[in-house]
Length: 358
Ligand SMILES: NC(=O)c1ccc[n+]([C@@H]2O[C@H](COP(=O)([O-])OP(=O)(O)OC[C@H]3O[C@@H](n4cnc5c(N)ncnc54)[C@H](O)[C@@H]3O)[C@@H](O)[C@H]2O)c1
Image 1 (cartoon, protein in one colour):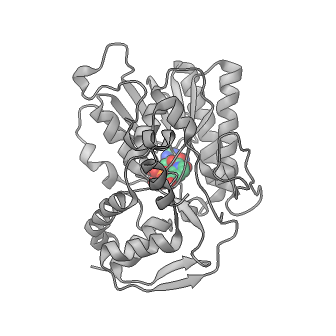
Image 2 (spheres, rainbow, N blue to C red):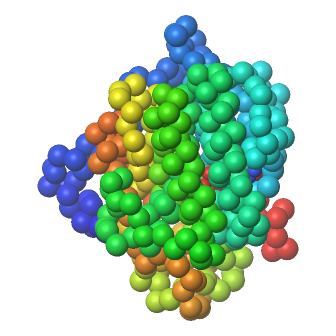
């Protein structure tokens, strides 16, 4: 669905999409400040991968909501810069640790986000990527079982592979190459999902699985090769914008603030075991449209260059978020241009520190 169709649906008052724009992202009220936390709300939360892009925003929001946050990260793709504003916060702790090793801490909830997420990073050491997904899941599930804690897995739309169904619903089993260069990530995440649901069936563990679709925003890595950061950095530095293939392939992009609200809403969901839940923004943009927006919003003089499509690159990926909407009352609310402006402002601030382009 393109943005025009999406807006047309909203204007026509189609029930789902009108709610998507206006609803609050929680089915149950989440306290706005520490003072409002009731005594039965879990207080200590472990965020693995908490120094990464999404993890650091999740730590911010959990602290705002009054939780004690233990951030565990091996700093492979995470950065102290992402969490430096939290250092010294009385309810925040950082522990450098690799989730492929067992961890013994006391917490009430676990968000398992530890895993490099961009192809450049997860293909750097594919064996370690699979270990992080699989051993990391086993270790965190073991910890959750010992503590009887609820645990949420940051899974991915990559479990659908190069999908033959559009948009993808949670019931779709996917179309994944088990031996390609992306398989360490895709199959690692699929195996982690298997482990999560086996722990649920076998040990009655309270698990949540979020299938995260393309997410963007401040604190993305400037050199992670993901399309939003690529285009913004290229536009800001006056470099050529790389369009793979014809640029007609589409993606949908969810702003990180929306994603964090969705993850927390899923963690807080109190109904029956919901199964995997897609979280993402269903509005699709072609790569060419995204590149044009990046150039327009940065006022760049950059030009486009074409390169062949990478192996196994999906041509289209779009979430069906009806389940998240119906169960959690969640839907994204940040428009691409608004999110891009915040992302551009972030990269404008950090680029002189991280590249030779001043
Ligand atoms: N960003 C997206 O668009 C997206 C899409 C789908 C799924 N996800 C998932 O969300 C999670 C967070 O993604 P992100 O975009 O913030 O990526 P990121 O690379 O910024 O964050 C991942 C964090 O995990 C840490 N990490 C990696 N291996 C580890 C290990 N063995 N032990 C401890 N820490 C480790 C990294 O240092 C980093 O801080 C990942 O699990 C990813 O698979 C992200």
